[in-house]
Image 1 (cartoon, rainbow, N blue to C red):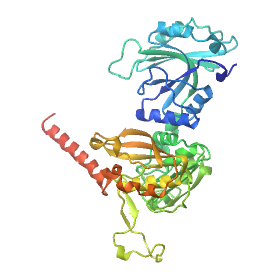
Image 2: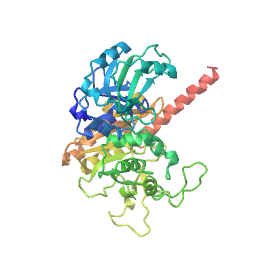
Image 3: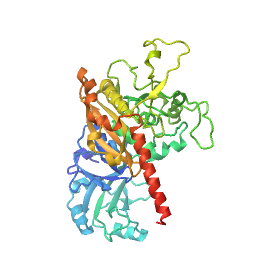
Length: 465
């Protein structure tokens, strides 16, 4: 059987999931970049479509993408397409026969699946569509249970469930190549995880962040607001060595009240290491420690291949750092009495993002990526609000809507140069941080929007609407 690199005119069709809609393109682009491939969309490409045709790939590339993607369901070697079944037939008959022949040998077994997007077909209708493709020269034997080759007829009926057309908008036929990693969303669900907290990142978003950061085997990944370590779990799945810090002593050491229903206190083995042990990746766990993200504790060197984090916004988790406004009581740096307990003070969101970008500029390797969440008050949002840094290039900016007035943006940045002395001061005159000035800037807007919605709902109830 000839390999895909020996066959000509190959195009691949990707079937994308409809959840995490805004994250699909950045994830696929990142996984292509990980293989050194550009993103080359085929004709009639539409970002929101459930089907994408991509050019310039070989089967090995496709399998590599599908081995990691949680946004893609399946991938196919595209043999034909059209707006009607007649157009599909013409397209298939024009497809190079040498590309088909290897999968249609007499001693082979095969199966044809029919998949319809946004419409359900009865079983007899599916059989009719399969029988209508008798113009293809299948020479093998049908095997429904364990076929050597799987082919698929895919019909796209649009994305509006309230307006389903009688006939499909587009029809595709091709050979199945690989499925994506949608199963990871279920198998890594926080519902079944040993150690969780109030703000543990869900599995789907954790893997999307990991993919956008281009995390790979033997990378060193750091999370400066590690919490219960959901992002470390996802990175360790792909073989990266993981570490993190957090200012919350109880979270780092797995102490205090449990976040689980009907559980009052955390158990003796509820910690981040136990989570990695649960998924068989404990060997990639380096350590986590109690540390203030605003204080320099690392040597000045490019240490990390990726920095992935979800900073606190002041809504469900407080924004704190060590320090005190009472400077007269502050001991000299590094001099503490045995009974010294660090005092915490407010940590403005503007300072969090300033410190995060400056830290990433100094401690990422060239080409390393920073992936983090930025909370947004939607009525005021514009792209100019995204914090920038001279050493970091903005790669992608995706939105996850939280409410009618708030959302968070998943920001991906890549280090392009080593920092100079002037770069560390550039944020002082940067207007990108102004919407986050003040300790409760985002928190106040968040609850202001909540109160307005509550008042509006109450008025509707009073008026009988």
